[in-house]
Each structure stands twice: as C-alpha cells, then as structure tokens.
Amino acid sequence: MEARQKEFDDLSAKQAAEMDAILLEQQITIRFMRDNATHAEEQQIQEEQRKEMKNWFDAQIRHLDSVAESGLKSKALENTIPDAKKTAQNGLKEGKEVTCLQSPHSSDAIALEATDDFVLFSDGLIGAN
Image 1 (cartoon, rainbow, N blue to C red):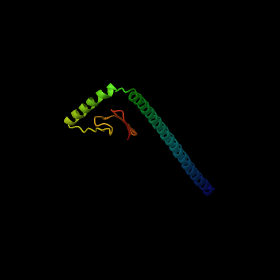
Image 2 (spheres, rainbow, N blue to C red):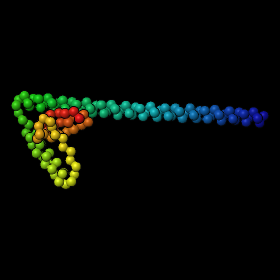
Image 3 (cartoon, rainbow, N blue to C red):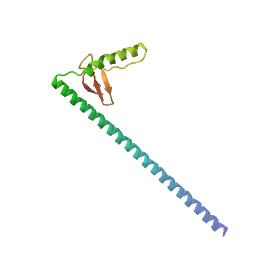
C-alpha cells in the first residue's frame, strides 16, 4: 500500500512539475508577445514622426518655391546666416566643438535644421542626410 502511495505521490509531483513548466512557457510567450507589441507601437510612432517631418519639409519646399518664383528673398534667412555664424564662432572661442554643415549651393548658407533624413540649409536648399 505504501509503495502505491509513493508511486502516486511521485506521479503527482511529476505532473505538477510538467504543469509548472507549461505555465512558465505560457508566461514567457505572453511577455514576448507584449514586447513585440510595444516594439511595433514604437515603430509606428517613429514612422508617423518621419511622415510629419517629411510633410514639414515638403511645406518648406513649397514655400521656398513660391518665394523663388515671386523673386523675393526671405529676410529671416538673411538674418539667420550671420547669427548662426556668430554662434559657431563664439562656440569655437569657448573651446566647444561646433559642427557647421555648409550648403553646396551657397558658401554663406549653413544648416538650420537637421533630422536623420534631411538637412535644411539657410539658403533654402534641402539635402538628404
């Protein structure tokens, strides 16, 4: 009788261990699915941000095209060039490292804005990064 009880206890312990392993595997699977969902959400947010930035650059291009067509110069851009150069010079005087991208279109133009994909220069040129 004791042998049967021991056999039953051993079988119960084995089944309990198997159930624990199954539950652990399910928990790992659920965590993995959550991580994948979070990663997918992050990718979607980044893609939306890229689209917004592209739309912003497209709007800037349209604006600059309309300015060029009408033969007008943007005073804001003219004023930005000396300010940016002055900031860069001050940074160099203070021993800071300053990166200043220069437009291939104009030697006086500098980079105003930069993203992973684009650079907007003060002369209106937009380059790929």
